[in-house]
Length: 135
Image (cartoon, rainbow, N blue to C red; front, side):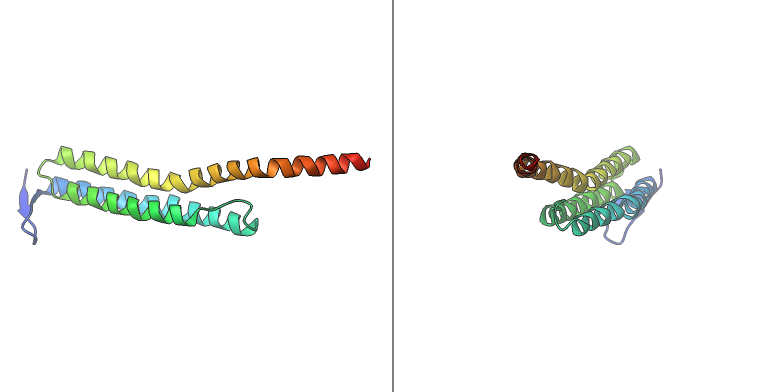
């Protein structure tokens, strides 16, 4: 196992640096192929329905920032490990965290929509009673 010294003085292995680089590439792919299109679609659905489908912008933003910090921290830890096995485990955990951050907007919109249906239900039933009373 070849070791090299970085500018910061940390001793790491090339295998660990490779693991971190592969993990960073996969996480960028997750962000570009999954996260951004999903958030764009959900925000567009909210805009096109005039807010009937709620999009929790603040919570999605906070989870995204928190997730990015966690993922970057895990990748930094992976890059600075001496053992490549530990680095690969950290990379897998970072990828799982990125997938969790990607799934959060969908779960938040689904839960918000389900709550909205509970609020709209009584209105729809009263309208139905009024319309059915006319016939």
